[in-house]
Amino acid sequence: MSDRYLDLATSTVGQRLVGALGLPTPVRLERWQSGRMHPVDGALLLGGASLAASLADGWQRLSDQGFASEAGRFDLPVWDPEQGPALKALLFDASALSRSEDLDQLRRFFQPALRHLTQCPHLVILGRPPESLADPMAASTQAALEGFSRSLAKELGQGGTLQLLYVDAGAEDQLEGALRFFLSPKSAYVSGQVLRLRACAARVADWTRPLAGRRALVTGASRGIGAAIAETLARDGAEVWLLDVPQASDALQALAARLGGHPIALDISAADAPQQLLQALPQPLDILVHNAGITRDKTLKNMDDSLWNSVLAINLQAPLRLTEALLDGGGLADHARLVLIASISGIAGNAGQTNYAASKAGLIGLARAWAPSLANRGISINAVAPGFIETAMTATIPFALREAGRRMNSLGQGGVPQDVAETVAWLAQPGSGAVSGQVLRVCGQSLLGA
Ligand code: NAP
Image 1 (cartoon, helix red, strand yellow):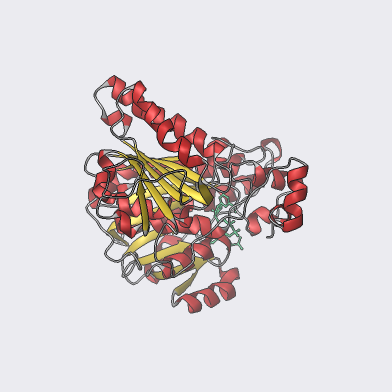
Image 2 (cartoon, rainbow, N blue to C red):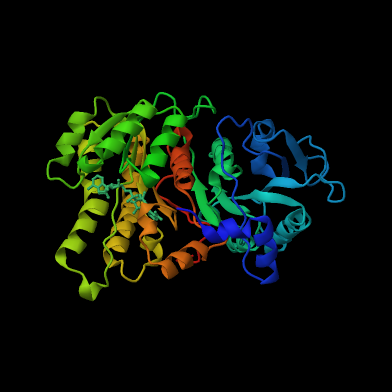
């Protein structure tokens, strides 16, 4: 669905009008295009210490223009604000900060660079998980990074994003995969997020096809976010099984044919859905994406049994039953990657969505609860919580609510299905076993539930 305000605000005439009226000015976000060489298409500025040293010989794979904030670091030229160039990405390693006085290093690194950013820049701060530090001062200093990051993300404007990655000791070698996502337009609609990376033995062999040889199932794949996930997983090399309700068979078959994938017409809430699914899958899956979901909104006092039950059955009970059946029936490979599509409604709550928000919060709970036991088999499970994404589902929201949902975030616009799909594709990579039991929001740093 088109966003008319964004079209206006980014047109030549509209830009002047919007500026003169003092209205918010969202920029058209840059998104990943197939065939790009480097995750960062422009200058990358590196600063800080220790952790990023593991990238000393790897930053060239991120960008072909590297600069350091200080002399003698990474064998790179020092970036000079007077001479430029403008910066596309910033990476500051704050893992060595251990006293509150050290936090000033953040200000000294970011302040000069902030005036010299290109449009849609991507910023990342690295830290150590505060809970892993014995020294209370060091733990407090690392915790402070969270407030700094979330605030600076809100100040960026110009389509900029910023995340904080807490990297456990031993997880440094998984940084490249995370930075390929968070410093590139693949994370165009992800901002203000805090994630933890843990040690993970699995690796991506070929960054041009990180999912080569992996078998993936996506539910609700005939349209919207599910179709984009299937396309993106296939783009990255996976063989895809696409599942949707029998009524969507035509669209499902057409997409499966285009992607060289396999359609499965099945209602995931049917009593025999687990058995049918196991029969339809010839071999264990490496990637399982529970995307199918519905909304049936009504305030609780007006909500009848069928509205309540259908949402809970499809959004929460079906993923739980299907995953249990796949685990018990040998349908999931060791080191599989499971992704549950939740919603920020499950975090913030939403009037008229007690059923939907309960189902989505339940999915987040499932990811957290299942992660420790699945880790024994190297399996990761995470929830992705989209905010306002332009699809058939959000097209049905009444106009005023729709506009509020679109604009109430740091990027001033809705996301597109590709934004959720890129996030799922990153979490589906072998090395992304470094992330498990977590929830990653794809919401442009929505104010809801922030
Ligand atoms: P969508 O356009 O409605 O697509 C969902 C697909 O799932 C549809 O093809 C739907 O078929 C299918 N489906 C529904 N019930 C099913 C069942 N019992 N068995 C198999 N397939 C079933 O939705 P979307 O906007 O792409 O959303 C995808 C996911 O993202 C959902 O889980 C949604 O809750 C979540 N999400 C979306 C947004 C957003 O802004 N769009 C925000 C947060 C979270 P039908 O034709 O029968 O409906």
